[in-house]
Image (tube, rainbow over all chains, first blue to last red; front, side, top):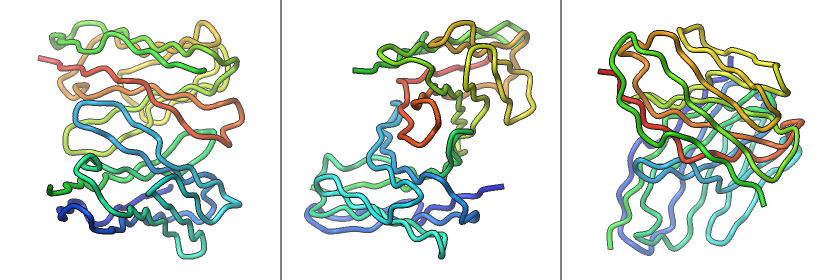
Length: 110
Length: 113
């Protein structure tokens, strides 16, 4: 059974810093790896999807990488802004659903 | 463009009462549909998924059930709610085949009292 772990559980940094969020998974046969953002009391917003044949995806200031052999994915946020404050979730899976980590609660200090 | 709706947005129900949460998707055909629950202090947990009308797979044994009466409609139900059913219920969809992004609805906050 797939297990997903996210480190750190919480992170507080000053505005402008570059930061890395980590995600590890136990089953290297992962199909998709998806990163989400969740604001308090809200649903999930998809940030990036890395399909099993891909190694990374980029969208604006966000870059996500996937290393299936080591069971790791990272989300890189460049030049962080207060509006980036949220919980970031990674999830792995396929057509039969996603397995989620518990998230990294990120606070960007103005 | 595709849109996913969930209702109600919030719900407070007594223990032992029935439950019906609805999810609909617009702008696509034959999507895969999913129900997840996010309980306080716990991660998101997959409850049910469906690859077509009347096809439901259950991931977690519980007193909840799901149905898909129409292609783009997914319903989560319970005959008798438990306190442990409280949580944030999220519906999601992906194009048929599952090789694409999952898109989530706004969620329903359920409090069982």
